[in-house]
Length: 475
Image (cartoon, rainbow, N blue to C red; front, side, top):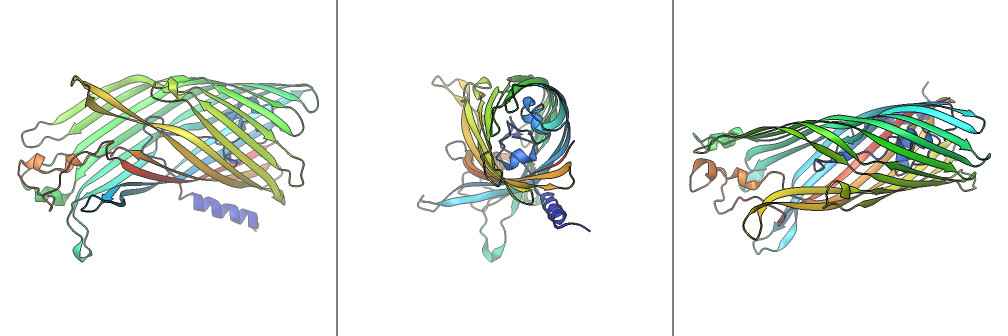
């Protein structure tokens, strides 16, 4: 017969199976993962000093010989649900701002999985360990769907006619296969020093397709004229390697320190870019098919953390990490950022811990557009925006057997920022394709269809509901 703990666990996993997805905005870096260790995830992603979970070796190679067990295996899943709402300012006939009008709302789901394992052994004061893991570093999975409707009024509760369908489908993951070695030396029963090294092989396939498809109603309205459809595909592979060094020190029964250095990495990016806009009226087809061969850079990361275990009856453990990311190595328009992670664990009742945490992570979003300088020469204009993404987390653990448990971590993320419209309005000006002086698709002939730039950007509101679940065996 199933115990009440098992029933709760199965209910949570069933609920989580309908969750997940990532932002369509992050096209270069994708959506990086903070940690795949479910316990650390529930504590705000703070796990640089981790002596309890097998996946802690992926956060800090020095955690390998910090473990209290000889053998450990972990299988983890990361599920995320993303909601993306995009809006534009709404004005009345007197040009007074009324509110933000949502024109697109998307909810999508994806999932990722990762295993890890280690073996560590102590020889009196000395210790050695060997471990390996496979995990996603960054996800490019995202979908976007938008209906373009005309400006006919909504009398009789009838929707305006649908003119076109805009879609973006992005899929791919940058994965890392990591080999970890670590050594330890115990100065005393309470002081233990650990040093670890990691060699990681990075590889991934990414495909992003953007399309505009006209509806049958729109095609019928323009009659014999052709409405051009648009297809844009970027398909590439990423490959390379990365090095990380980590250290951890247990300085007393209640205090420990940890640090890692992840070297900046340049990966090979190879693939192809395809663009096609159909011919129309007196304009020929516009088509590009070119090879991609360039560098893909990941920045240097330096991270410090500590753990503090105060003396109390609920065996509290407090973790905090601070991370420095050198984004200026990627582009001169980026500033370096500092990220913050903190979490606490209480053993509340029957050895079921309560974990709570918070993190604040900075990301960069850069767009380009064509412009002219003071001499009217063509130049590329860059717009860089730093986006702060806070997350609150929580979770617990369920002990199935003496050496087998399931860790659960939940997170809620939200952020708001401005972004350029991904599909320019000028494309839906049917007068361009028919040569007529009046619109065939738009009842109000007084409107002006033009692309919106940074002078009138979208306001994007996103939120994520995430689950990190891990099955952990130690011996």
